Length: 174
Image (tube, rainbow, N blue to C red):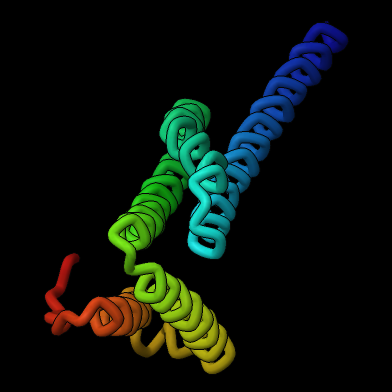
C-alpha cells in the first residue's frame, strides 16, 4: 500500500515538473520571438532593406500562438493567468510601437522612426530607474505600484507623442 502511494506521488511530481518545464520553455520562446521582432525592425531601419523584416514577420505570425499556449498551460493558476494578461498587454503595446515605426519607415520617415525607438529605449530605462528607487525607498507602500506605473506610462506617452509631433493628453485608463 505504501509503495503504491509513493509511486502515485512520484508520478504526480513528475507531471508537475514536466508542466513547469513546458511553461518555462513557452515563456522563453515568447521572449525570443519578441526579440526577433525587434531585431527585424532594427535591421530594417538601419539598412532600409526589406529582407531584414523576415524575423519580424515570422515572429508576428507565431507570437499569438505562443500566448495561447501559455494561457492553456496556466489555466490551473489564477495568479499566472493575471501575470500573463499583463505580459500580453505589454507585448501588444510593444508590437504596436514596432508596427508604427515600420510604418513611418515605409513612408520614408526613417529618422523619425529611429527617434521614437531612441525615446522609447530612454523611457524604458527611466521606468526601470523609477522602479528601482521605489523598491529601494519602498515608495510602493506609500504610492502603490499602480501610481508608479501610471507615471511611467505617462512619461513614455509624452516622449512618444512629442517625437511624432503630437500633443499628449493623459487620461486614466484604469
